Image (cartoon, rainbow, N blue to C red):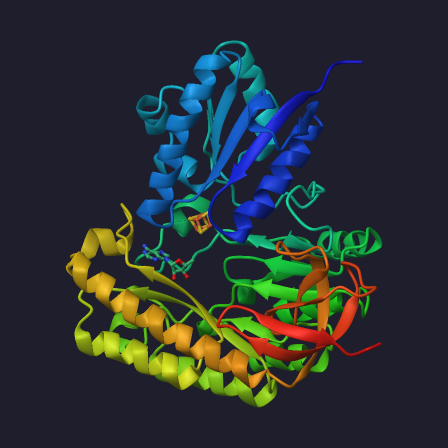
Length: 444
Ligand code: 5AD
Ligand code: SF4
């Protein structure tokens, strides 16, 4: 029997990238590579990279310097770059980072076997072609990273929204949806393997659409079908775009116990003027109407968001509108960023990056401080209430404690008792911080 080689994949960026790394691991497994968690034992190291902000790329550059040292010790080691940064910089990376052997963009992973052969024959290898139809629908991801309880399922790829600040349409290409039958099959198999939660992933899940003969499946229909795989499998999804999140979708969420009551709806800015410049396709009023619909149709639904501080031309007044929007919605959680100009985006070509660094920082700090206050307020409202928690694993601090999540996606820590990861546990919240709930089990 041929000795297996060892591959080590390090993933940066979004959930989509983590999902892609599992697809890559599956392709590599067929090529006689088994995953290892010991980087020093690896014959092949792949970094699955992100380009969303400049600091995401800088982290990868720093990591490459460290890997250079490793390669000097193990001359046979193959180092490859996958994902968005590979796609954005293409062969420029081979010139700039001389110890890279392999560059593969998000739609090129099927070519990895041939590309690795090329590397073995002493050449550098690159595939950064974007595709109009690649969804890796038939590839069964190797669940490398997770707990065995929760998993990602990629339902669509690419993005055609062209928000002015964003590099993703250039790195991930055209929007395309995956055959729903393959999605449902994947969810069913995960359930049979003991998984109890799936997150359906896409850059803009609301525009999921599959048409075949008489069959038409949109996102609400897909979500319903996945929820019907089994009442004991929880379903989440990310990310929704505010411009096309429909009441129909909210009604499907409200009427299915196992579809989680948590919606991530990136606002980016509270100022209609800035939203226009960002080319987001909605106004503040439109966004607030969607928030009102969520609160009306799904009472108790958690709402989380993404916010960018200091976008081109943002004034103090615009920033204050973001602050007031946060107070109006009362987000449960937010991902908050300083604007970072990305080469070749609409904003980079058309607008000046004119908010000074210290003003960006001050505004971001204010946004973070407010969100801390809002998260704490939201968590305090949960004290005394009982939630059904899906136990995901043993707490890092003590093996006598489990952690899990509520339907609202909040982390709860509680005494283990006789429970195990994968169990649904009724937990009454007794205390909290801004980040975590602490609870006591009540169903025994
Ligand atoms: N600068 C800062 N933040 C950005 N995001 C996307 N592009 C940029 C950028 N150029 C943020 C948005 C998006 C999240 C994934 O990253 O908030 O929703
Ligand atoms: Fe994900 Fe966007 Fe980063 Fe690509 S650039 S890895 S799509 S967050």
